[in-house]
Amino acid sequence: MDRTTGGAPTRPPQGVAGAVLLLGVLLAGAAPLIPLAVLVYRYEPELLPLFAVPLAVLVAAWRIARDRARDQLTDPLTDLPNRQALLLAAQESIAEHTEGYSVGLILLDLDRFRSLNDTLGHTAGDRLLVHIARRLHRALRSGGAAGSATRESIDDVFAGLPRHYRGRPMVARMGGDEFAVLLPGIGCPDSLEKVAKALIAELAAPIRLDGLLLVLEASAGVCVFPQHAQDAESLLRRADVAMGHAQRGRTSVEQYDEAQDADTPYRIGLLGDLRRALETGEVQLHYQPKVAFDGRVVGLEALLRWERPGQGRVSPDEFVGLAESSGLMPRLTDYVLEAAVGQLAQWREQGLQVQVAVNVSPRDVLNPGFAQRVAGHLVRHQVPAHALQLEITERLLLDDSRRAADTLAELRGYGVGMSLDDFGTGHSSLVRLRSLPVGELKIDRSFVSRMATDDHDAAVVRCSVELAHSLGLTVVAEGVEDDETWERLNRMGVDAVQGWLVSAALPAEQATAWLRVHRTGAPPVERLGSAADRLPPAIQPVLPPVIQAAQAAKLEIQAPKQQSWAPTRPQ
Image (tube, rainbow, N blue to C red; front, top):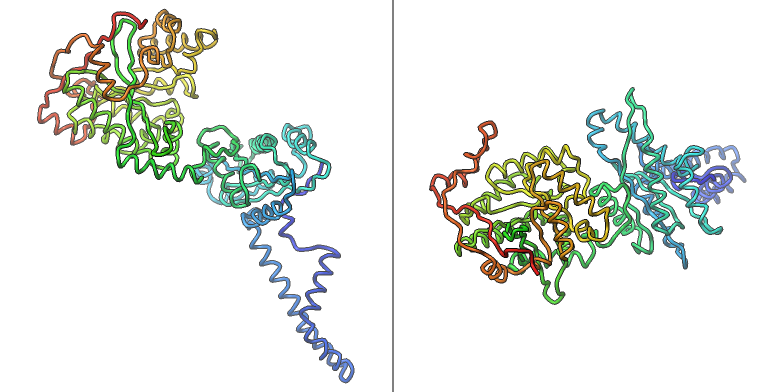
């Protein structure tokens, strides 16, 4: 199957069509000269050759205008249509929209091209982009090499189209290392995703450049008119949203999902309300207990709750994800830390010695100065560092493991506890896991909740427990909701559990009452040395000024002691 792709809309007309167009331009431009030419022909025919000059000027002007129009719609490096040409083509395809007709768009971005460009030089980078452009153009024109998976995947999609399909794919360069593929008439997101994966596989074929063998990776976003967007601009912007999500999640290809788009009217309003909620204190913390099998309270996890005025409760996954994608996450994290550490201070004043865990995002940990900000909250409320625990996810191991390990080591140096949350759902390696200074591992509820009925999940939990203990970590199981799961976890050697079987997440007042009911006695008070005193000399941290000031003042702090809440498991 031969499919003509991009470039055609920006080329000058050829053959008979070009001759007719040129003749039309000449006639239109020379129309005012025709009466004069008739008179000259009748009375002074020897002067007729002089009319060749204005005609030559008209031809030159036509060529200049043609080339200028072409340049405005063509990428000068790859000779592919540019962003403007793609938008015009998309608008034309959408204008032809009839019942059941749709337009698909794939936006591709080369992963880590900037570092490659910096290493090899911009000249080599430009040559690489030209090679990529040709490869994409060739893949859509002929479906890739004969017998290749790319050709089979793309041909399968086109073979499934209606017979009246007249769409013509266009490959365009959007700028930098971004390319787009417009596919009029293909409106099934799954079919577009199949084409996108085939194109990414085509780009992944090794490329030899300056004696080096390069293997490129790419991410793609898929968007469809009219299912996802109602005009060409929205189609392009939402494909870009999907592509960004594919890059962040390292999923290769993503279809547009309104829930991931921070720029929809609903999410823009939600973001504005969230900013106001943080200013007015509408966002609340609830606390869910974690208990050991002998009845000791080993801590509580702080969980976010937000009642949006006039809208009801908003899911934490929704507004936390929005905060992370919009740049509001550092402010939200500081808000949570201030509230949690403040509550810890109140509990300690009431004699309730307990540790509170706070979830932090990878963006927080990688943000410069994060460790000092955490220390500032602790010193301001005169709460010892070991009363606070930070929960991180496996995603942090993929972003910048070295930088993350340095920040977490600094926090551990202050005495802050570390826990690896949602273990088993990410893509971490054992080497990276070993490099993080965490003391606790939390098994995700997706495995725990099904382990009583699914042997595979039970095996995952058992292996996770053995792995964590071999690394010297304590293990907490999330999502414990029935007696059988409790018993199985106990036999596997899990150290503590968390879930509805123990308690739901409680507001601060109810959590205080719960702790008072389930404690067995006030813990002793002792003076602790600084966190630096407890570290080997080789890794002595440089404490921030606020910590040094607190140590100089010789603040009296209380040692943590886990509270017993019941002699046996709940009945």
